[in-house]
Length: 320
Image (cartoon, rainbow, N blue to C red; front, side):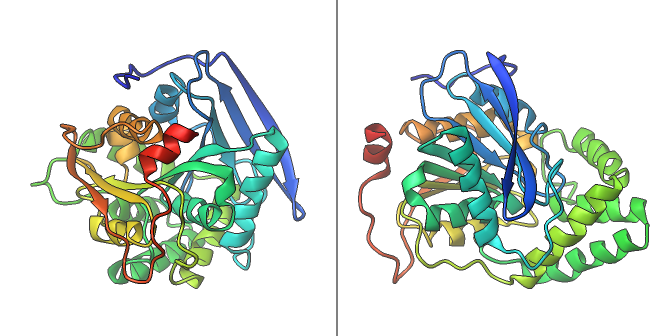
């Protein structure tokens, strides 16, 4: 199938569903494709990302699949989740969404913070996934970022919103003017305004979610995910660097790693149509090499001690 898609594909129907698990309320948004060709794509986002804000990435995906976006506990309209709840609980809430929606197997996409949730679902519930794409993922917080992330909590607690917004953007966006990043100025302006005007509920969610991230210092890579996995980030990502993303791909038994050219941590905004094209190619077993928008695309050899791959990704996707 071709994935040369135009953005803005309309949904046939959209529904919002409320879910409950472990005493918390959360929600999902289902946009139904008029021309579904593959299993639904479920998207789990990062800080301040709501189920309504996947934009062109979700719209483009609608050309071939139903799209499910979620506000898990700690996100968007959902209840705030205390830091003591970890990735296992969040993975269970996502599976609850699948159960409530009657979805047996899905393609899963996790962005930034959401990548750790997706990774945990792949570890604990591999039978619910056909494949997984991780955008801006890492196995641990970079040493140089931990102090800066902690500082954002101080700024937020003190109500220093403009400084908070500036620091958050600086963490995620490439600051080197000599390096090309698509739509840098526009996205920088939008995010500064967005982060400086967060609601009281979003403040509480960010404080709890970020503390959870800091408390859990490294992602548990055992058991190794066995579902076909693509780990991708922007070539200039300063937070989830290409090195860290590739290292995470190497913890999986069946993985590809790629970097989007002229992009950073916000690649899904900066190169949304290309990110969607790459993901759809992966979901459908098409070649991932020779694409003009990629700087790197490679099959990753699992690190020593990772179980052998059970079946090639292309065969698994074709079988599904």
